[in-house]
Every structure is written in C-alpha cells, then in structure tokens.
Length: 377
Image 1 (tube, one colour):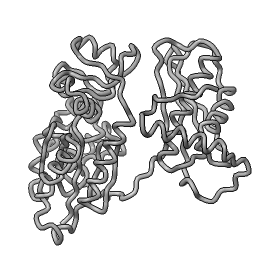
Image 2: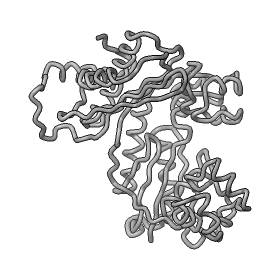
Image 3: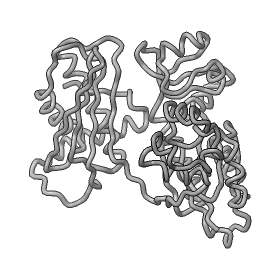
C-alpha cells in the first residue's frame, strides 16, 4: 500500500526564536524586523490571533498587533535546526523530498514489512522531533502527496491527521474548495458563484462548467477533489535558484547606494550557493522602482561562479543594462543554472587566494551567523 507522510514544522522561525528566548514564549512574536516596507516572514500562533500572517506588510502587522515583539530573524540558526530535522526524516524513510527549510514529504510505502503499523510512525516522528529540537511539528499521513499535505495543515499546531485510502474521498468532501492547493482567492470566488463551495461539490461538477474557471488545470484539480494524486516523492531536490532580495526602508538614490547594496546581496547569495555545494552559470538582477515597476536582467557565464567577487562582477555587467531613472525600493540578486561544486570545469581564472578568503568568511558566518561580518569593496 502507498503511504506518504508530510511533516510541517509549526511557525518554524518564530518557534525557534521562542525556544531560544524564553521571554518570547506565549507572546505574539513576528519575525521580519521593523522596517516599514518589510514583510512578515513568520509569526507565532499568538500573533495569528490578531490576524497577522506571513507575507503581510510589517506596517499592517503593527496596526493589527501593537503589542507584538518584532525580531529580524537569524537564518543561520534556522538552517542549523533544519539540518537536525532533515536528519530525523532520514531515520524514518530513505526517500525524503524537502519542500522548504521546514517541511518535507516522506515515502513510507512498503515499510510495513519493517515497522509494522505505518500509522504508528506519525506520533513517533512528532515525538522524535520534539525530543531532539524542542519544537512541535504537524503531520499528515495519507495515500498521496495532496492528501498528506492537506492533512498536515488541518489541525495545526502540533497536529496529526491520518487519512486512510478507503476514507479519503468522504474525508475531504466537506472541506472548503480553497483547501485544494492552487485554488486562490479569485478562482474560489468564481467557483462560489456557480454554487461550488466544497471539495465534494467540485468532485462531481461537470467539467464544462469548470473549464471557464480552471482552464487547462480542470482535470488535475478535479482529480485532487476525488483524492487522486499520482505524483511521486522525489528523493533528491536540488534548488533551481538561490537568491536574495531586499526592500529598503528608504529608496536608494545614488550610484554608490546601488553599488553597496548589490555588493552586500552578492555576498549573501555567494554564501548560500557555497553552503549548498553548488556553482552557478546564470546571475539575475532584479530592480523594483518607487513606482513599483520592476525589471530583471540575466547573464550566463561560460565558467560557473560561487565566489562573491565573481557573482558581483556579473551583476555589474547587468547594472549597465538597467536605466536608473527613478529611486529604487528593492534590489535582488539570484544565481541559477547550477552544477555541483567540484565538477570538472576549465577555469583559467582560478584564484586560490580568493577561495581561501571566502572559505574563512564562510566559516565565521556558519558559526556566528550571516550578519557577523560584511566585506567592504
């Protein structure tokens, strides 16, 4: 029998902060800083009671919850805990597909021959995570990815939902139609207009009526409403891109401000690329102006890059292609088209001194956090 588990940590960044700082526990906490143009990265469940949620502008979150505690976040610490969690996942299944820093699918199919009752693994993995990290996780266990992920989301925090194959269709039928991933606000409103409010109603609706709303996704979405999802758990999931973007509290106005900001972003991205054991061929620059107009430019190099200086050199080429005609509110740098570091490449510009310098800085950041040191240029 096919069994897929989805494990999702509860309010991960905020929970780590509350774990490390007892004074934050039981209080509304927002990870995302205080920059008036920033957004909420994660918030504690105490903050969610006020209507705060991820991706909400910080200014709006402050209005909704004036008593909230705001912290800027410590990515190095979240990565550290995430690595612990991913190791625990590998104890339960040889086939793990990470979706993000704090969630993953585990394929448990056929493991009843080794562990007996598969459904007993749900409570066991929650206990194992709690003992190892002090954090809670929500778990969905079901015959496929869609049902497993839906299950982990239903009873947060610290939830456990097991959906057996013979129960799946009846279990999901009364749920709101927007519980199907991909049905956003607009599609939900359009479905409501034709009398479809639940997953069960969507499952039996004639495709003719759905086509105008869901388009080419009609069959896929209706299959999900029937509890059908044939996607496999992918054991290896390398990132397609690694990037960093920042919305600035005050618009950037001068060439020096652009230059300094992009150099800092190049350092942040370079560190992440090297920590992933990768090198990339393509660098992308994103610019968003005060008017909210955005432009992106990309360049692909023959020789892969991972060092901060090499990434920034490509960024500088892209800077020359952009019109800096108005103030800038956001900048972003992304590296993509990856190869594994150490693969055979012809690199006549190899610079051992720069590599050692970057490695030394990486060691400091990995130990003390990304903000421990920044390089001038």
